[in-house]
Length: 200
Image 1 (cartoon, helix red, strand yellow):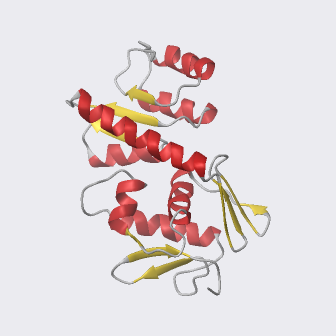
Image 2: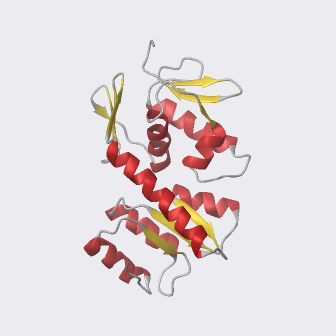
Image 3: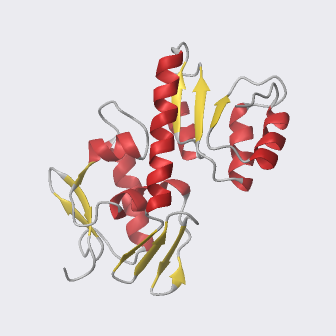
């Protein structure tokens, strides 16, 4: 385990050391932690757990959308932080165990975070990729919005369905489909969403 007192020192250590997971405090003395996260995501896919005193929901969503894998709000116990780190590492290991998933003509490389449709690369945002990857790990299964909020957006509380719906809409557009004429993403009314190969 290593610790760095500034954001720039942390970035250098992460590039040189390639840790399994990073716990990032947003209140750094030299640069805002959100900027560090942005720079980190440009050079490394390492899982990041953000530690923050900012408990505003919109701020938390912004941080998660910027690339954080999870967050804990101060004050927190060391046991709570350790549990969050274990969960992030477990999800990272699952991705490594099942690095490539094919659904019809959709090719999802979990490790490289790349998606191809009919051989052509798809330009997905981080959350669009995370959403698709989670559904791909449960091919043919109905995944509830509550589960998507908890696993993709790390929001264990209720509400937030519009966040899921908006990202599903963006993802559908890139997959060349719509809610009225779905190919891969099928809504089960009142339950959730499932990913299936076309015509299955």
